[in-house]
Image (cartoon, rainbow, N blue to C red; front, side, top):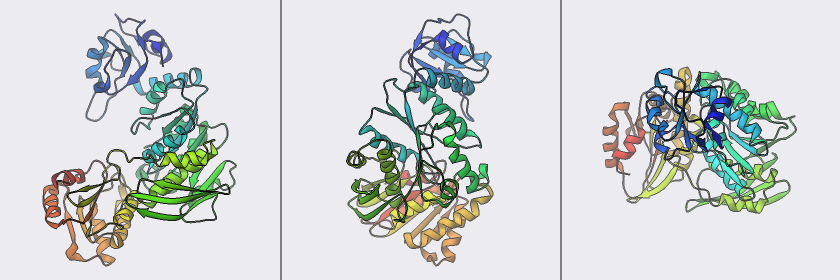
Length: 452
């Protein structure tokens, strides 16, 4: 973007605070005060449960500018609006129509795997087009307006992640980003507390089509999606199991941290070497490969691009530490992602140790969904260490299904130090250990204290 402070105030429906220089020019926008290094970045003052960005507005407005909604923080070079989130959505919607009307958007949504799939899709699309991808997990009605405003105007495609926590959000996101196409990674149990059922989650995810001119969906062979879209022109289904779908895989080989497989689509077979383990990553790669081919990327280019994939942050990174294979997956957790992580642990060497924590935001569904994980543990792990409150249901189900009691340990959330000490005593060179839980649990502390 490139707007003066006065133009920004007009477009977002705000007013300039007294003493402002309306001619100041801004080319970016950010809500992280630590990331703003120059006066050309407009600061968005959001509030959270434990922070208030307004506290940094005055300082940042000395050389730059800010958008605020608390009159108590009014200062020169600030734009005062009724609500920062709503004002940015309005601003981004205008910018999308006026400055980025040429831009095509590939939206990535689903219950789990969105960021991984976004990164894979950006690699595939980038093999043939000039591509921008959204930063980190800026996938909400708070983050996506800023992403739209920060997209370079010479971009041909943008790969944008679309998330949700409440009903109605996906349709608003779709109206803003106006996707040319979308990938739905899966329909799981994440946010089931807000949507009541997987059927409700499926309906919300399919609202990604609200801003499309023509439907272009690449999806897994999920029964709920098939039932909703089997007669929809422009919907393609992909499978890692069923060769009767539009696209499928065969000849899967996992070795030395790579998964080689053959993607079968549109009468052609293409070999792909993915530098990652787990059938869930193959699933995401297949979706991206097929979607890319549908959008004009040559199959060979798409396959080669996937060879450059790298795991991001604390999402299932696999490494060797002092002779122990460590699978660190502490970013988020749902029954689906738990099962996927356990499937990787199952292929490990030595003793296979699962260190599992709570899956959050499941409400009344928590006991049943944690028990689903317990059923998957039995065939994947030799030792189970549970740290948290709802993890007792994992241990309970694992025991019922025959997991040996002498290899099962349950700790309360605040007992993470004891859990780490136990783990250190159990580990030997050649073993494999998985750390998996929702982000706001203490599993990350167990990982850190264990020295792995």
